[in-house]
Image (tube, rainbow, N blue to C red; front, side, top):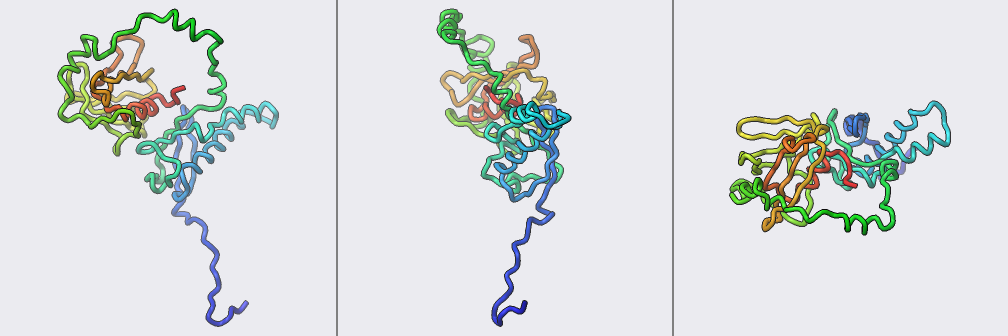
Length: 268
């Protein structure tokens, strides 16, 4: 059709270029989910896509459609509201994949609970809280008041400690490493989170421990009295007292991010 003189034919809006689509892996527990997605879509939209994928994986456990299958699907999928995606730190819902520096072939960590995980958490029975209070042991001594930890705390904040902030929570800084802490031997410690290897590296001047995150049973912390912007953090790597790795002068704003990344689950 010939257009009138002085006008131009309106061109259709082009779809996303193939160059804007990247393929990457999302690791959830022991599963690997292969994803292809646009760099200009948001993290929130990606989470909804991952929910469909986890639901799709659940469906594959059944040979034929059934009520049981649909029921399993609804609880096995990870709801977007309960997801945390980690790639060079926590990915925020309103950011695009391009802004999060997602690249071809990269690896993300998915942290989250399925509805079935949540439904298995049993609420306390009526009156159990009162009974628990009556049976509680005497209040335990604070770590910073215990002799073995007090000798480290009394040396004061290390000169190269990272600035601490209380009453705030932040994702890990760029590079996913933290420095300026001390261990119980008074050695300077640096933590590096190797997301692609699912390891945390504990580095001192003498050695580097490459610890699989799956081998760490728990991460607990306690504010340092008088310096609440810093915490004592302990990584439990086994069942004995000797398998604990103590870290002193950890900036408080990073403690929750460390727990989320290492434990790979929500703190329910």
